[in-house]
Length: 329
Image 1: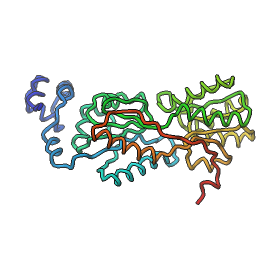
Image 2 (image 1 turned 60 degrees about the vertical axis):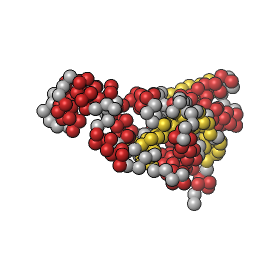
Image 3 (image 1 turned 180 degrees about the vertical axis):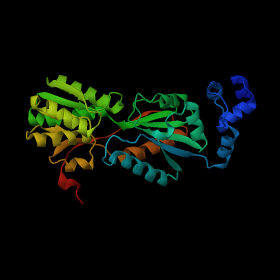
Image 4 (image 1 turned 90 degrees about the vertical axis):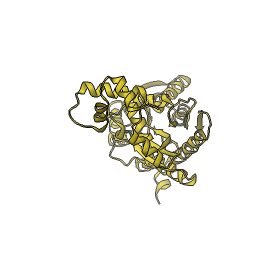
């Protein structure tokens, strides 16, 4: 087991200096702090205080690691459903669960994140909303210290499973229905974010469909923002005859812009949010069972914790037409 002496030896400082860095005492230069932190990370050192915490806490806890959407003032229905589904399933399976947000780990190194979770006896983690920009989290995944389930990210390894719907096929299905119903040939596609894994798959789906149907495809990124989709619709909708959106929030923004412009263009979304029913017009969308996906992620994590090998799990989706009367209580 790595000790504080090993850290001191690796970093070339006194044991007391390592202790000061670990406890946040003043009077240590930034250069020295950097050397000590690098040694801690290289050696995967766990301080005694954390080791003691590990021995005193209940083992077998799991964590939900969530990337909350702070770009919209609307209630994030997706995250709420994810949490509800996971909490209910964890209760059924008698698993101890905590929720952690990406913002709580901001600025931490991989070694610090590992110690953070180990201090709370976390053995398994379900990650929601990870993108290609999350380099530190990717390193955490690749380290294999914890059993992990990635939601909507197509990657699996020995200790890592991924789970979600087939976003490429779902985008093809909803767009095909909308395009053929309206005999459309010129598509404005409002995509999500460039580094979003589901967004990239949805874009690939619409590109394949446009080629198959010999449609002209015009792509712009709306970053999953209702406001950006609204502005893009004002700018480009008049010269296109259908608007396909990579999310329901963007579809709502597009539809509200069309209403203000007083022109008709068919719009379809992706997700199946209740908010779609209040958009003012009926729209096709992909309906995902977010609570069900999250519950299945808990079951998959339990499978890994019991010795199962990481795998890809594809869950079903449905195409629906959201309208107001379907959602009011």
